[in-house]
Length: 102
Image (cartoon, rainbow, N blue to C red; front, top):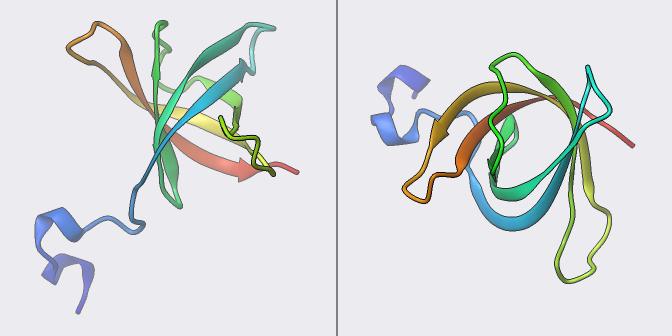
């Protein structure tokens, strides 16, 4: 069965896993670090919630850590693919993973 034969809700290449873990993002073009929450993670990207908006196309090095002290943390170079707001007024940012970092 090809991707076009699947129901719409299953057309993703990767399944999203709910995470709810702290996230920090260092912007590539500045020394600024944005703190937020990683809402979910998939093989191609992640969705994060922050108090600050980022422009689509912005690149950043992101690090997702565990509240429970688990390691290793996820470190990746990512690019902003979309930005929306939620009911609480926070920004929900979709990031495309460009490269996993050591």
